[in-house]
Structures are given as structure tokens and as C-alpha cells.
Image (tube, rainbow, N blue to C red; front, side, top):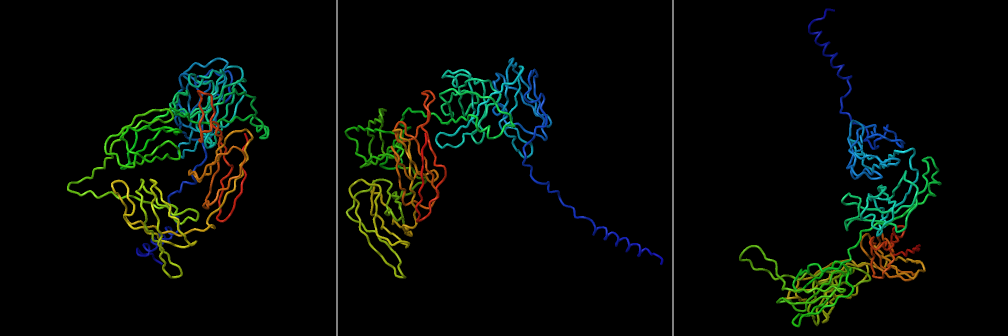
Length: 553
């Protein structure tokens, strides 16, 4: 058969279509799984634990490109060098050049504290320790331990831990340490390749990076007694043998400035004056001038703020003499100044008194009104309670009075059925405060709870027979639910707890001031000891949970 031009064209088109149908679909590469491994060291020159070291630099080779984060703070060298080395990334290696002359017959330790990371994903190389000796052998002793926050007992990470061969009290304030390392995320620390002997140990959250305790807000930890180094074990030693090595525990804290001070007093609203102090106040004595108005005084739970509710507004500057635990201050109270409103020709509305409801629906507490400042007495007022029982609307009217007691909270004891919905209404303009400020209509709706909505915790506190005072604290997160002072073993029942998760802690109140106190290095005083119950406690509704908290010194 003779092929024509038309036949050839059809044949070529068919072949092309067949070839295209057999081709694979082209897609963008996915790149594979994300890299989650830290960089690996494949070579070091000179090798780790080299003796007779006389080089001016070391070079560390990695299996991938790396970055070095803040080496002046995160690369720790013991003994410390007056002039810090230089650090250069070159290819897949790190070059460390020494600028100081190395001491003879000395073991040097370099600790890279989680500062080496791979270039792409930032995976950190965990604590890497490099050591060398300019003498015939490496020092082969060690010290290990943990540092915990004294108040919470949480691990104290990123603290510098320092060893001193001399024992003067002024060491951390005046002297660079002989050895230094850093705590890990779990609060642990390790000194390796140190000399045999006794040391003073100190830890520091070094804010200004000078390895000196010279700032009042630097977190510190210390032991009053000296500590001994002990022979290192090889890496191949059994875990059971390593577990027998001594383990130090230090407790970190920030020293409290105990100097009492009255901060600038506040006048947040008409007739209200507040005196915030730097620390809790035990005794507060006031001597007013003859024409000073009377006031009602309240002190907050932490006893560091005194609030006055004046029985009549201050209309002219008036003088008071204050004595807070021996700290004398003279204050002039001035009349309250209303905030200016923008715009001209506007009539300024009379300020409304803000009133809130507390304990709505609670089984064991009455519904309570809270006022921003004391209200005037009233012989009688009505509270309307609306409910719906079996499709029948019911209205109950209760009558109450405001006693002449200069109060800011008013309980409204009323009778409710459990698990029912109620609405409470109080008409407007019943309660009056300063300048006849009053309120709008007050309304609240709630469903009542029953005894079955609450749980109970029974905690058996077993204390040492040491004659000391302890404070037991029940908390829900950061919120303090209840505090109790204990002088001997005791069982405390916590009733009407909402079904939530709670924590319990106890601290030894050494000075019996009712609060936890941090330590003081200048006085060589450790922080008051804290004990945390080993686990959180989940409270279930209508269920009693019983636990035993044994405090061991």
C-alpha cells in the first residue's frame, strides 16, 4: 500500500499521543521528612581529653552546617580566661582560637551549653564537654547536682554553677570562680575533670554576664558548707553504680529587699485612698490632724496595701501621720479630681455606682452585693426573686436593711430550691454612696447548685516533731483557695470544693510571719523550705478524697 502524505500525518499523530499517554506525571519533590536530629561531631583536632596541649586553637568538625548561639555566654571555660576566645564557623566546622596564654599543668574544660545547632532546623546539640590538659594528665574528679526553685521546687535552668577553691564569704561578690558550668532544663549540673579537693559552690542567674553576684535581682543559690569532689566513673560504668555517687541539691531564690517604703498613695475614686507599701505591714498606726475626717480602714490579704473609705469626702487638703512598723511618713490627702470629659457644652452625667453580685447559685454561701465603697444605712429595701416551678411563675419578695456599719458587702440570705433557675431584681436608687451616687436596676439570673455539685478533700498532714510552724496552702492553679497554720500533725477537711484539679504545698515558717521568705546570702540564710504534695488532686463531685502528706526534713 502506498503511503500518502495524509497517511504519514495520521501515523505521526497517533505515535505522539501514545508516547504522551505513557509519560509519568511531573510533580514537585516533597523534600522528605523533617530533620529532627542534632548535628553530630565527626572529628576534633586536637582530640578531646588531649594531654600536653600546646595549640592555639581547636577545630570541631560536624556532619552538617551549624550555627553557634551567643558563645560568650553559652561556651563556659574553666578555669575562666581573662580574654575570651574567638569563634569562627568555617564550612561544617567550628574554629576556637585562644587569645590567653594557657597555664602550665592545668586541665581546661569547655562546656558548650546547648548553643550549637544545625543550620536548617535549629536542632540543638545537647551539652557538649571538651577538655584538655597542658600537663601530663587530666584531672579526673567530678561534682554533680540539681538546682530547684526554692519557692516552687521547679527545676532552675540556665543558671551558672560556680566552684571556688578558696572559702571567703565574699567570693561570689568579688571573685571569678575556678570552675563554671550551667544547669540544664531539668536543673541538673555536672563538673567533670576537676581537681580533687574541697570547694565552695554557688549558682547565679547572671544578668550582666560577669560571673559576679552584683545585682539585687540576680537569682542565686548556695551551700554554707564546703563540698568534696569525688573520682569520676567511666562512661561504661553501670547505671546502678553511677546512682551511688553524691548528688547535691541547691535551692535558688532572689534576695528580697527588706527596706520598707510607702509608695505614692492613690486616690482611685471619690472618698477612697490607698497606701501601697513595698512589703507587708504588721502594725499600722495613724495620727490624724484635728480637722481630718474619719475613715473605715481595710488591709488586703497580703497586708501590703491599706485602703481608707472616708466617712465624708475630703474637701480640702488634710494631714495624716503614718507609722508602718516604725516607718514614719507624713501625707497630705487632697480632694478627688474628676476626670475631664472632652467636648464643649456637654452635661456631665452623674456617675453611677457599680454594684456586683457574688456567690450566685452557690449552695453554701448567700448571694452577696459588693459595693465599690461603703454605702449609707437604710432601714428597709425589697429584693424580688422570680422563679418558675412546674409551669407556674412564682415571685417572692424579701426585705432587708443596711445597718449603720460602714459596709461594702451585703449578704442577702434567701431560700432556694436546688437545681432551679432564679432571677433576682433590686430596684434602682436604693443604695447611696458619696455625693449621693446611686445605681441602676440590679439584675442577676442563676441556677442553684446542690450538695452533690461539690467534692471534699481530707488531707492528713504529718509534720516533724521539731516545734516549728508550717503553713499549708491549697491552690487551684495560681489561685489560693485556703491557708492554714500548723504547729503539729493535723487533719484538715476542705469542703465545698468545685470539681477541679488542686495542688497542695507546705512551707516551714521559720520566723512565724505567716508568709514564705527567700534566703539572704549576706546573712548566710537559706530560703524557707517548701514541700510540694507529689501529685495534683482531682476532686470529683459528691465524693470524698483522702490523702496523706508526710513532711520529711
